[in-house]
Length: 257
Image (cartoon, rainbow, N blue to C red; front, side):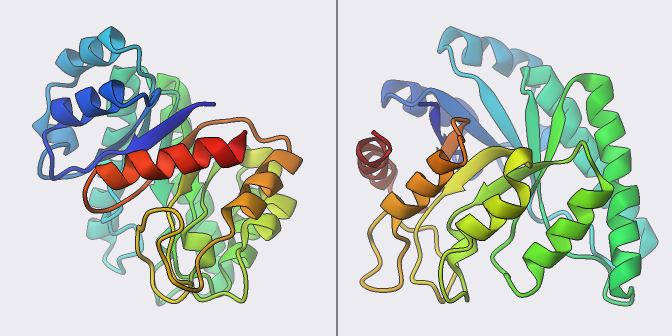
């Protein structure tokens, strides 16, 4: 079982990596965000030996604040450049995957044009990633209205695009967890899974089992993953004290078997 934790960019990166190694995790899910892990703010070639010394593979996560949906072309171009830089960092660290959060498309575009925008946008990113040996995955956001429909259309247009599925995001504002629906549609693209809990109404990166009501049924969702033969990397995204991540990891390992 390959299990990691999404790093907190507010903490020094070296201390995050050492903490993961000391607490039995075997994967770093590295958030490329300010203040401590922005692509321009770290000497990445010096970080790679630290990962090697701790025998920790890495998956990178482009900053979720990149405004790829901004209506201003120059702003979108700058966001695209930053996404490409995230792929360069991924390559420098030896990461085989970099994930990018779905943010929709510029509001003035109709749906069909939005799909074409994503085809062009991720066509550029996939080409850049292929050149440096990094696969690109699109991660679902917590706004679920129409999202799975949009993903079906986007992925149909981009055969090399991977899916990073966030269990927590798939539980917000829905009648039930969307895990099974996403896997029925896109299981063959699934490359990474992120995990947190919430009350089903608000996106909150809570420890597993923390919500009094509305939380995920992790035994069911993990069984769903296994029923689709998923045995790839998992990463906890838990806010607050890091001790909650260790407690959640223990529960997750028990449920996974």
